[in-house]
Length: 231
Image (cartoon, rainbow, N blue to C red):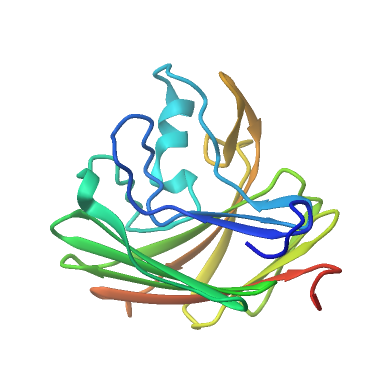
């Protein structure tokens, strides 16, 4: 976090591991982001204990701010499969790195670097014994979203009331930028409260080409623009 005032501070929550299967979703290496009075990137929440498509989706990998390969949802994984492996904390920069090994055939690594107050770098690696045909990097935009636009250089700019969030891919893979809102299928739905859902806005950077083999590396820059940038 930055600052002493809750409303105008920036908060990042990073998930890697969990001590119990109870209430555990497929959210390893995901994160949420709050800045200057607004939730910019959010967890989709929990709908309840019923068994239906909404509950299954909200627990899935594709519902969270993480990344996956070949369209996979990783639901059956050992508790010890994910953990934080490195951290650094200083007044102007913080870092956390986590690993997720859902099975013997694939390993995910994410390093999140927070350059205070308004820059975040994601450094993602995945190693697979099977061919990586496609990857998806997922961002659930907060409910305070007003609009967003996609630029030709693999950048998405999301505008909120008090902030704008710029997401740029620094490694020039062949991306397709997708949007899911829950209006045409279940993907993109958020849980509003117990047994109630709302249409959301999920942005996905999907890379799919013949050059992807058994290792994929992605580096992403997130910039928060607001009136606190110089503080």
